[in-house]
Image (cartoon, rainbow, N blue to C red; front, side, top):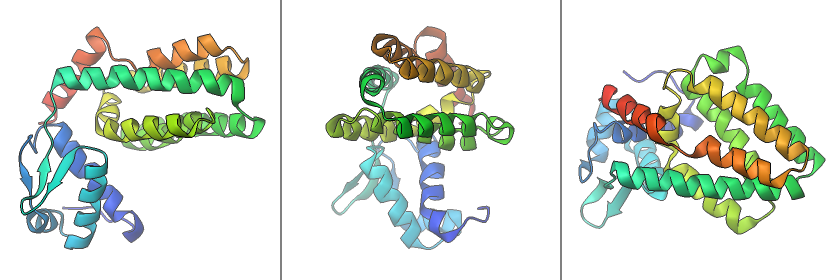
Length: 222
């Protein structure tokens, strides 16, 4: 049964629940997502379901095809890893530029979002931490002052959002994420472009055990 959600946030809530079902393989690649069935399953009207599907299509998780409706897009571990590799490079570029171009007001905002991530009630809730963590990253992108880079990085961030959120369920990942945020902020504050770039890249890239942990988390949620 769906929990109570503010009407203005209903489509976003549904988007997150559907994208998690996609990420965990409950909704498999090629599967048709019927608006009526989804509306009945979640106990809502078709309108917020349709809005959620449009958001998922813009993120690349589903395709909306003529006469067939919404279909889950294919993805495999190799492609997922490659996407994280590109994401790491884009965020590294954002951090590099931010360390040179950031304003005092933007630096304050990044520090504020990090403080909000560090709140006890946030740390204990992976989904809430993800939303606050997302604010931190979007603030970092904006501080690059490169509109094209911001657009491309934000788009891929959205494409990987379900997997980035699931990664936070790996034991100890939130604590590591917070420490990495602090190091990135410190490098940007000092104007150390190369260090900021290196730290941002390491923060995103998934290698070896971390990638295996993510895949295991996905399998365990099926």
